Structures are given as C-alpha cells and as structure tokens.
Image 1: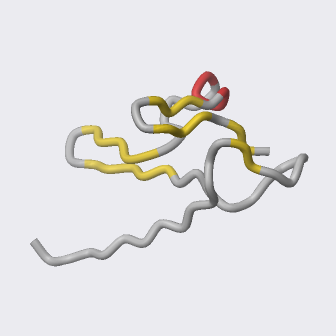
Image 2: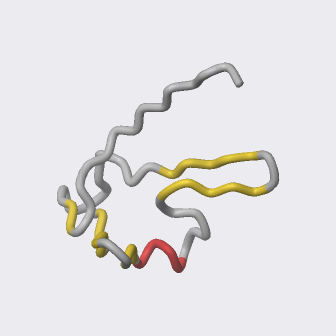
Length: 62
C-alpha cells in the first residue's frame, strides 16, 4: 500500500522515516535522482493520498 498526504505545501508519507529520498527530484553536486511514487503495490492493492505516476523525461543536448 502506498499512503501519504500530497497537497500544496505538504508532502508527507511514513516512508520518509525509512528512506531519505522517497518522492521527487533530489540533487547532490552534479548528480540528480528522481524518485517516482510509482504505480504498483505490496500487500493492500490501494493508494491513499498519492495518484499513480508515470514519469517522462525529455533529454536535450546542452
């Protein structure tokens, strides 16, 4: 099950106490990491607070 609160100004999930990077874009130096909230489930087949997400990246030459 994926559970959390995702409203403007507040993004919270119990998974943040397990993983430092759990949703969104993170940058450290010149490296970037994007963590998708996903589509699937483990255990309860449901989602609360987060819509399914498919991320599309368009890469362009700098």
